[in-house]
Image 1 (tube, protein in one colour):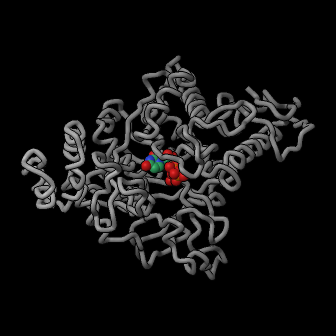
Image 2 (cartoon, helix red, strand yellow):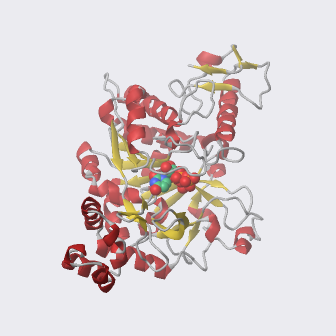
Length: 481
Ligand code: UTP
């Protein structure tokens, strides 16, 4: 490469020698391949771009990830006893956990953490996913639904704290270069949906260069490298580098409730889940639902080996025969616990796991078509996943929740897991709440198209509705506020 550059022109055409040598050390000298075509400004730009790359880190991550591959050959199903199943919970237990969780929240020990750096390619919207209006009667966005659930829990926790004390739950929102500006502007324009501006803390996840199968950095143009967000697991490193882990510790946070942006039914800051984690004294817990059918496109919880650590296998990584295999005793799927991206961490664990993940360079290969200076090429995005931390946890608990109550994903523009399916799931649940509270639903439009929505400001999980709904009729579509 250096020789090719020399042939291309005289002294002034050459990149700085030391710079070239350093790139050669990491096998990345091809990034200067179009040096001779660049003007001075572009050359400076390219040098800045390359200087900003932590070459030893990127090389290590690419090398280890490409060598390791993703497959886990012999995953072991989770033992029935290691999951907290819905059927096993008593009303007293639920009440106790709710109380324990609410107490911790009222003491200011919980922060919520939103993963909102994804590009939402399947949805195909230019806005960050959280901004989208899924067509509810209220027209609320996903961000607004989440904010109002936080407001409701703050109110319940403040009531519990008593003596007029206002509880504030800090909301950390991870964005990426693709979602950052639009997300901040949306929150500002909507006046933080009634939250205090200072309790909403934005920070950006990192990006990594896209590479070829040989680990060579792909150039987006002659003077710009191709980059992609480092996956939702980038949150671990980003929390640390942004200083927010320390910030959380200073605020007296003990637990962090982490969730993805694209679930219209997500129970943000769920006191029940928190209370369960406190009761079990686990450093990490995840909510799960039962898989609907073997080929459902969801990741499943497994053990890496018999008595090994808990991990998640993506649907593409689970052998189809294993995915369909059935436990002879229970008649249920062996690998039935689906990951729905709602997890609780102790702050202590979050602080410890970041270094371990970084040391082991746990990243995955996402093969994608990547725009490059030579046209679209098949390349690799290096991504960390949120669940990569689970195997490092001294204790992990899996907590089953009712799918219809907590899981309405928004992944695709239409059909399965779309804004429409999520809207209908939410409305169906809310109408069940209203009817259970003694209300009546009146409709002149078919109920499979719309329904009654309950504002999170008055009810988080169906509570508090008797007084408002009993004996009253609600005409579809409407929002009960
Ligand atoms: P998905 O894996 O569904 O990705 O993200 P996505 O970007 O939203 O959608 P597609 O795959 O491009 O269609 C699950 C959660 O992880 C977040 C998303 O914002 C979502 O909340 N995420 C994903 C990040 O925060 N950063 C990433 O780099 C990727």
